[in-house]
Figure 1 (cartoon, helix red, strand yellow):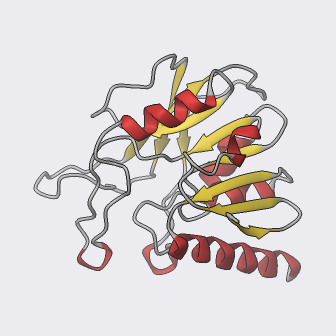
Figure 2 (tube, rainbow, N blue to C red):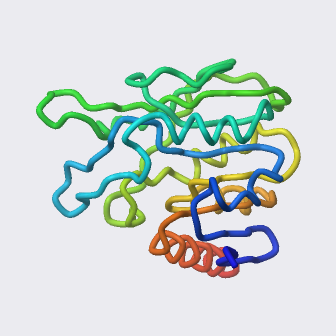
Length: 211
């Protein structure tokens, strides 16, 4: 069985999303998938790579599995955008230099998010979303964690229905969906990150109940 965790809003599976296909039954895809930049952290204490990030092959395979339904997928200017990209959003990291070549005096203070499919909702706003990265002291132990606030801003524009994140990572998409009262399905290939997600979900629930 691939099911690792389940509550009223979140269903999390352990495994490779190309084999664990429950996520393909969802309505909207929101994911920070490996997009082919061969990421490797320059921080000594965070010396990690991203599985499947050697090329855009995994990205393209997963998007093909998803089809033409609504999707928000992270990406990089270093790699060609996914086919059928309709729009580009920018995550402004609020001054954080971000990842990149540490020999350069400039970092990447932004990331691209590609919009695929139709049905997006909400008031018209700028395509630039400003959201600080999680502080280092409280940052989830994952190479590329996304701020929950950023994922909430993205999900707020999503069409109704079930959210899918087949590269659940630190769990920000799942947490954000639950915070907004949306049901979500996640898949994560590494068990240590499944453990991290469950821990964060439990902590988030604890904090909510304590308000």
